[in-house]
Image (cartoon, rainbow, N blue to C red; front, top):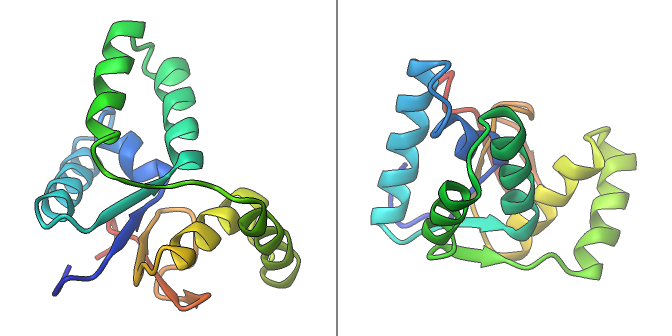
Length: 140
């Protein structure tokens, strides 16, 4: 990551940082989160935190105490609150782009917060949507 770009992290980046099943992805995700957080330029949305919580509880079988501690760390980040306008924009984007509604909502949240980059594994690497560049850190 270069300069002072605001970056938005998709759910899968947060999840891989805590999933030991793939050590390579875990290391990349942790480095990305640490570097962006140290520069105070990382954003997530309420949607991402909800999806992350669900995935950790279901797939990693985290305890309530561990999940709450983990969330407390992420609550220190800049968090984009999903708004009705973002939901409408996501619906439009879904029908225009073919991205899932939830991926479209991530893009809408990132764009509304002025992020230049969304780090994600789920969308087209290198594509720019709503003025936000999509980067897959696992192929960089």
